[in-house]
Image (tube, rainbow, N blue to C red):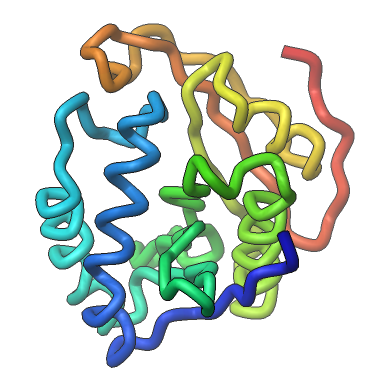
Length: 184
C-alpha cells in the first residue's frame, strides 16, 4: 500500500466524512477493538456518535485527522486529539480513537496517524499527551515503541465489544521529548 494522505478535517469537511468515519468505527469494533462500544454497533449508530462530535470540532476542542483512500473514497484510519479547556490543564491533550480499518493494518498507518497528532500537539504548545488502551491489545507495543511511557494498569476499566470487563493501560508522552519506556 502506498502512503495514504492524512489530513486534518476542518469543521466544514467533518460532516461530509461522518458516514466514512462511522463505517471505520463499526469495522474496528467488529474486529474486536475496545473503543467504548459493544458488539452489534452499526455503521449508522457509529456515524451518529461521530456526528455528535461536530460541535467539539467546530469549537476547536477536538481535532480529527483522517487517512483517505482517494481511489475508493474510504476512510482507512483516523486519530483525534482532545484539547483540555480547564484553566489548569490547557498544556495537556488526550489522544482518542486511533483506528485503522482491518484491511489497512500492518502497513504503518497507525504509526503515521499517531505521529501526525503528536506533531500537531507540539505545534499547538501542548507539553503533555495522555491516552489509554486495552491492556494486551496490539496498540500497546505501538505506543511503547513510539516513546510513550506506561503509567499503570487499571483492572476492569471498560468492557470489550463482547461485554467482558478488561483492564486498560494508561500512557503519557511529552511531545518532542524522547523518554525511556518503562517496563510494565
